[in-house]
Amino acid sequence: MKRFPRSVALALIATVTATVWVAGAEAGAASELRPAFVGGKLSSKFRRAESLPPNGGFENSLVGWAGYNATLSIVSPGASGAAARVVLEGAAEDFSIYPTARPVTSTAAGAVYDARASVRSLTPGLRICLRIREWAGDSVVGSAQACAMSTSEWQLLPAFGYSVVGGGHELDIYAYALSVGANDSFDVDEISLAVSAGRTPPPPPPPPPPAIGLTATAVDHAHIRLDWAAVSGAASYRVSRGALAVGTTTDTTFTDTLLWAQSSYAYRVEALSASGATLSAVSGSAATSVLPAGGFPRPFAANGVWNKPIGAAPLHPRSAALAAFFASHAINPNLTFYSYGVSVSETRPSDPLQSVPCIRFVNCTLGAFGSFRIPTTAQADPSSDGHLAIYDPVAGREWDMWQAWKSGDSWSAGAGAAVSMSGDGIAAANTASGNAANFPLLGGIVRPEELLQGRIDHALVFMMPQVSNLGRVCPATHSVGDTSHPDALKQGTRIQLDPGLNVDSLAIPAWQKTIGRALQVYGAYLRDSSSSLAIIGENPISRGYDAWALVGLGEPNAGLMRGFPWDRFRVLDAATNC
Image 1 (tube, rainbow, N blue to C red):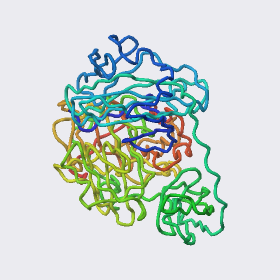
Image 2: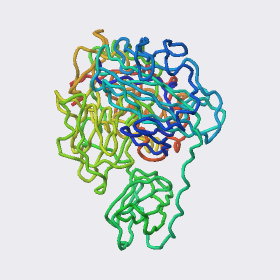
Image 3: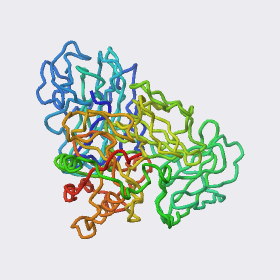
Image 4: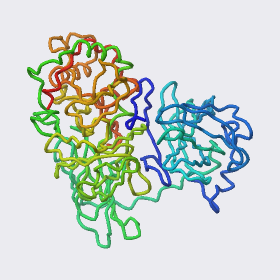
């Protein structure tokens, strides 16, 4: 089975505006609306609400339900009466059960829906989730989910609520699992999606009177430093950027990170007592500076594999055949934004210290430098890859996670690596890093600021269908492939857009021309296998704002690259890669 899952065509990629993880799952930025539990069961108020998906109790019937990458059957007894059994079909990396018709066909903006389900599985280590999605036409504009690790006994997934983004939309709900091996399965019962039975969030307490004393100062294009006077009786200070809490500290200084250049930000710092009560608050604002004249900062060694131009590097002896295979597999080409990208988070000294176990592959090296700090705003990419890169620019270290998962205040990962950013950041052979090639997750990804400045000063990374299973080439130290075709590219292969092509004359958007020029000067390395061809970009989910929208790419499908000259590539001799 492949260790590192696929990409998806960007036409199918969801724009996730509010992913909620609750009670043993990842905590997102959206508010949670939890029904009360009584003796381990949902309160009668919640249970009385009318469930919208038909036959969610699967009483001796699967009518109205279908399986994705799965076969379905009825088992008994379930949590209550019969239940549905969902069995992995083939070698897919996720499988699910879903209603054949969306249970909500016209929403009201702000309406709240509650969801619940009971699950069990004999497969150890299986992560089972229930998810709501909000659809505007063919695009997902919001979602929320709850997850739990499998047990052989029936368990009620943490109940959660979803607040609708817009009117006239549709909602669906489905239960899914991320597979860990062949013949995985889970049972599910009592799937319910219901209009909230009169629950409304309590009104927020009135803010304390603001006081003077917060100094906000721009450090550079991406950082603002906050300083304030100590408050008598304060045990800690909560820092918010707008409505987003970005951190808590016991110091009287805090630096906000990953901000947008030449942008104004408003801050509020609340002094908290030991019990969490707000004692006082101060407010202030500042604007970031312009991007550096030398360009957006790039990680890793200046003369290493990521930042060294191709120059006169020779072609592979069979470049034409390999390039033809590449072009023939340029299926649904795209730049990844909101799914199957890399979520990036910059750590600071006040962030919580974490010891992150790897639960899928024990040969990971996340603990190579010991425990490390993860910002409270950090979120994993919502795809099944769950990529998250944490980096410390002061220490020059990076922590890469595949299938990153937050449970309460703790994190775990399926695999990962801790690497130094002073070199190339590539994990050693025989270890399980954050992707199939063992590349650092920050290596080669496209950042929104690079499209803003109109140039990318490093090599890119990509993934594609039909990767060779006949080995790897430098700089890759690991490989996952699915074909023995002699022309298939191996992990680590470096491709280059024909340097003689006049990119500026092509009828493609300006951002694609920026990528095209980088592919001519620096090329791109094959990092992963996937179901579509994808240039890998940053997922801005950990920033707290949509950085892609700020360069005009905030719409679903904006990253499609079907007009790009994929037939004008060549393959470089791997002997010159490293």
